[in-house]
Image 1 (tube, rainbow, N blue to C red):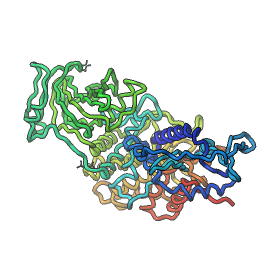
Image 2 (image 1 turned 90 degrees about the vertical axis):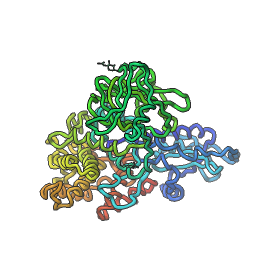
Image 3 (image 1 turned 120 degrees about the vertical axis):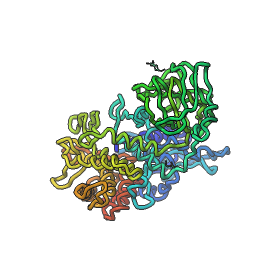
Image 4 (image 1 turned 30 degrees about the vertical axis):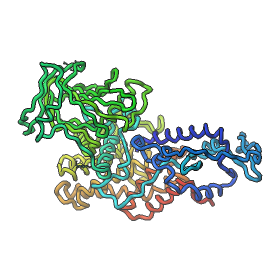
Length: 615
Ligand SMILES: *[C@@H]1O[C@H](CO)[C@@H](O)[C@H](O)[C@H]1NC(C)=O
Ligand SMILES: *[C@@H]1O[C@H](CO)[C@@H](O)[C@H](O)[C@H]1NC(C)=O
């Protein structure tokens, strides 16, 4: 998965920095006996098992911003903390590390205390002082990431893995959600920004999953067709030459608002004053005549600053000036729906206004006005807490509209795994993109039964039969095992998480085809059999090759240590390691192979510092 977990790492860094300051005061907390490995086991068992410690930091992937910080931080009681130390019983002692350098330690009788700031770097562990229930505690974690135990059998129409916890669009590497297409634009492998099918499919899948798990949205309608005349009276006209009326629209076959006023953005426009704090997703049908535009003003509740988000009919993705952010929504002279998460749109615009802008807090925003400029019609304007399904379908529709003649979504940036050794020139396909798209498109099909989604999902499988060297995605390991490559480099890279995502996509596709026989409705029997074989072959490879990724204390991200002579393993950082585990746990609900179960269980132990036994 090429997806973003820097946020967590940064959070961890912040936490530990905070800790380092305290460290000076508190000096020593953790006793450690560096020479003994059994030390690990002890520590591992006694304290680390408590996942309660990091309820949100442990989130898998960049989804923190919607979560409160550590909830206990908010309820730190105002009381005197116990800082008594019997300093006189400690003495200073030098710790000589591997005969190489020294660290200043403390000694108390037979025990030696090593500074945590040293241990932290030496062992890559995480710790901070936390205060709750009137006590200070030092909380130590071996990893910063969290495993989600599946609640039941994986369902191709259900939640996608643990994606209900993802918030793709908030990630820093998402430049913004494009106004024209309504999907995220990434800066991941290229600073200019581009559409990345993996990210778009994940955006769709996360909203699809949240639609299942979130509580029902609050939807405030400003244009019920029943009461549209009274709705129309709420709007304010800037001058005598501006007009606003309700008319019957022949295409929509309902009453809509028609407006006419100056189209210049400096003119006040036709305005609807609002005051909504929680409903920050706008959705409306709109059809402009000529150069119309729609704008929304949002206010920061603390500073009272007002920012305006302009949705203008241009192709410029995003720009900003003063307290205004402009999103190009393309030509909208026929009826189309505009659905915008105003919180995200402001969040992405602020850095363009002020490079050092603070992150916006969801709770700090309210919508204060909607403006219409130029001429046109609007209907069904709502503000909601969420619009998950509409956002999901924007992603699914993008996938349908942008699939090429090979059934793929070519990625137009260079991807370098190892400079000069494993590189992909722009235009490569990714089995992960194909697989995640299948997972999104099959869900779109189940929801709507529209054949175009089924056809696109099915066509996405074609590339799984084309070898990497011929711009496909299949690698073969030891002339035997077929592996669908997230990055189809030559030599092959065998990235694990991307491969498993592609298998889940094939599984979803197989389910849509109705098993290996096909029910004829969406897949022919031959197509269904082909999909089933692709999945089966992939699972055989996974079970055979999974041990190669086991590093004894963690997992490896890919197999470069096997493929490139002399290359060191590319260890998976904790969030990728937990992705591996989450994926394996998902597979164990649909395949009872002991390999998957045992490896997943062992890899979970690694997260608490356990290691494979040595001889
Ligand atoms: C999910 O989508 C359906 C259909 O749009 C909607 O009725 C429902 O309220 C949504 N639920 C959530 C939690 O988003
Ligand atoms: C359309 O409106 C935008 C924003 O008001 C303005 O910048 C642009 O010049 C207008 N274009 C035309 C052709 O009037």
